[in-house]
Image (cartoon, rainbow, N blue to C red; front, side, top):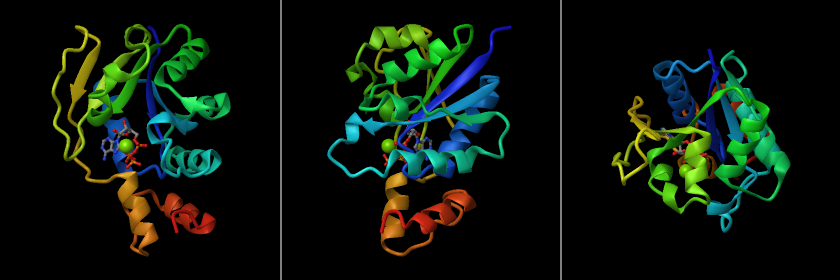
Length: 193
Ligand code: ATP
Ligand code: MG
C-alpha cells in the first residue's frame, strides 16, 4: 500500500484551530497516514504585508502539532528561501516521498485561485487537491480537471490568522482560538503587538 500523505501549506501566522480541525478531518476522510504542515517562506500573495519571522511561524506550528503522532512540520519552504510557490512545495515533498500519494489540503478561498497558480497542470500531476470549506467561503467548482480536486466540508470554525493577529494587537484574548502553547509563545515573543 502506498503511503498517503496530506500536505497543508500555509503562512500559519499564527497557526489556529481552523487549520488543525481541517487537517484532522481530511486525514480521517481520506485515510491519510500523516499530514505534513509546511509553513511558507515569504508568501508571494502576501508580499505587501508584514509576515512574522519564518522561525516563529515554524515553531508555533511545531508546538501546535507536537502532540499528534499523525502531524509533522516540514522546513522545506522556509529553507528554500525566497517566495513560496505550491509547485516547489510539492516537488520537494515528492522528492522526499517518491512512493507516496500526496494530498494537498487548501482552503476553498485559495482553491478558487488555483488556475492563477504557476504550472497548474503539473500541480495536478503531483498531488490530489482537497478544498476545505471555511465560514464565509462557498465551495464551487470552477472546472477543475476530473478527479483532480475534492471539495470537503469541515466543521465550520470562524477563525482566521488575520483575526487572531488583530485580537492580540488590541489586547483581546486568543485563548481557545489557537492551542494553549501558541498563546504562550505569542506572549513570550511579543508577536502582533
Ligand atoms: P490569514 O488570515 O493571514 O490569511 P489564514 O487564517 O487564512 O491566515 P493561512 O495560513 O493563510 O491562514 O491558511 C493556510 C490554509 O488553511 C489555507 O488554505 C486556508 O484557506 C486554510 N484555512 C485557514 N483558516 C481556516 C479555517 N478556519 N477553516 C478551514 N481552513 C482554513
Ligand atoms: Mg489566508
